[in-house]
Each structure stands twice: as C-alpha cells, then as structure tokens.
Length: 230
Image (cartoon, rainbow, N blue to C red; front, top):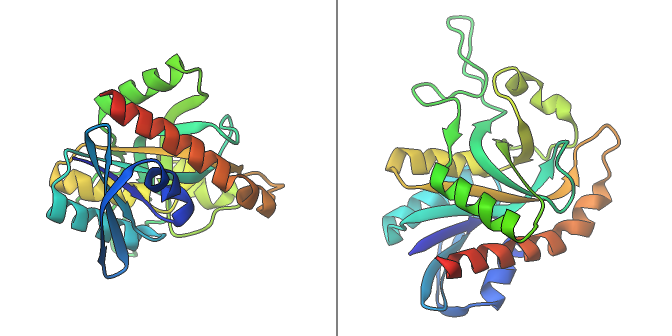
C-alpha cells in the first residue's frame, strides 16, 4: 500500500474524485481515505496544515497502515528558477525555522539536535519521478524543499537556512516534518510539490488563490498515473 499525505482539501480532491473510495476513517483531526485505482491500493490522508499536523499524520499512517512508501504532495511557494505550474521533486528536505542555538551552545540553523540537517528523499523515487515527468515533457525540477510554520512571502525568511543548504526551490509547511518521521521509521519518502506562487519582493497574494486548484489537479493526475504504472 502506498501512502499519500496532503494538508488541505484542494490537495486531495483529485485523488478522491478519480479513484474508488473503499473506506473513509476519521481519527480526531486526521481523515484517512482507502482508495483503489487499477488494483493499486492507496491510503490518502488529509493532515491539516503545519509541521505538527503533518508529523502526527505520518506517525498515525505508519502505525495504522505500514505503507511501503509515503509521498507528500500539494502546493508550495517557489523560488527561481522554479515557475508557477512547475513540479518540484524534493531530493532534500530542511527546516528553515528551527534554531537550537543558545548562549551555551551553537548548533546549525535548521538542525534538530541529534538528527540530520537535511532529510533525503528516497533516491530511487526521485529518479523515477524525474524520468516519468521528463518523458511526458512536464516541467519539473529536483532540489531542496524548505519547511516551516510561516506563510512565506519573502526570501528573507530563508536567509539563515540558505547559509547552510543550497538549491532551495520551494517552501512549504509539511515536507520536512513528514520526512523526519519517515527517517525515524525507516520508511521510503518523497515530497513532490506544485508551485502555486513565486516568492519575490513583489509577491502577489492573489497568485496563490488563483493557481491552487489547477496546479493541485495536474499534480494529482500525474502522481496517480505514476502509481498505476508501477
């Protein structure tokens, strides 16, 4: 069984509308959907936004369903060279809002004590999705996704983590948290995000609302087609 985690309705709607829903289970604030498409079983979870919701959902999914891998999907803010509509395959996931330094000790910005600075997606999944998108001539980039509990409208939020890691292409609120849970449970993980808005000094709020439905639908379509092809 393949696990998919997304935060909000717009990010899960395509999957629900284009598969057979075998069962719907609500576990407090998390909703799990057992989906089936062409003999493929998928457990889809709507986590709610943010790192705590994401990590709790990933833990529950692993405990309840023991998926063979977990894909995190949804929208993200993009940084150049990413453009609206591009898919970003996160080969590395980092926190941009973690800082455990104090007057007593200094730690790398973004690093949870005792854990890696960067969580790595499953390299085989990264390569396979990159090839899948390229064969369909779908614009996609492979790079770092930075996660935190802010709605990022300016790259100034990323100044500290940019000193520690390179090639940040997208920012979101869930990917690194799910990656951390998968790292601790030794579950293959991949985050794929559709760029809904571009973070610049001239950020436009309306860009996010205008693009969310279309980019989520297209990304959901491609992920579902990939799952059915394997």
